[in-house]
Length: 315
Image (tube, rainbow, N blue to C red; front, side):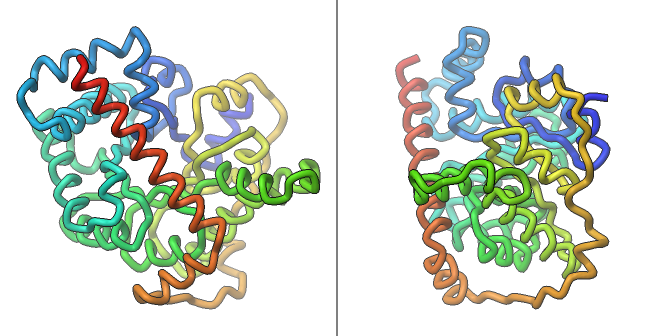
């Protein structure tokens, strides 16, 4: 049994890519996309026709609508290859606008429904800002399930749990990146690997908090830099993994043991946390890493959204 097969015994494996042709070989249950991944995909010769087709079919429509139609096209292609769900992201430039996020999410769902896709097979990805979490609360009440992304802190996770969101994507690799950069030459890779990795520790703490308090929101570790981070989170509800790391897992037969366990988490002594808006904003502000990585992530996704629009208008 290879590591990928072993991991699937403990955790639902999700493919983190827009390259659906590459993804199929790993047989993930779900898949996640984002503007950066779609931008990367449409610049490949095999996917360029999808962009051209969207532009030709919907020429004259607003560019944001054509973008959404392209995202849904990719989502439908992915859903033809997986048994589970696909995550499709709302434009990151709406991360601080609750009403606009809700409206864009509803349009994405309507486009999926027009293609015959059941709402239950789609997760709408939204940045875990206060406004994004509030949008997710409203969407969940309307039966539209959400995936809260760019999540770097317990404060964000607690607020998402309070909002009743379907799933959160706490980032491992970007947390690791931040602490490694801060440490500079003092960084000890061996001492901060595996279960001691700061990104792994963050996701483990969130997982334990949710399971201890019976919070139904699914935890999906994301943004991995190496296989060691993935193995250290075996047992997490879901892990979304890039094709390159899926290939490494499939090529290795080193044994994997379950690292996260819901029953063990329930036995811990973890106090309940509650946030109102002011408390959330202060807790997030108090976490320099989470504040910086959230802002950086939104900026990066927004830049790629603009690049995708430019490709659309030039096509």
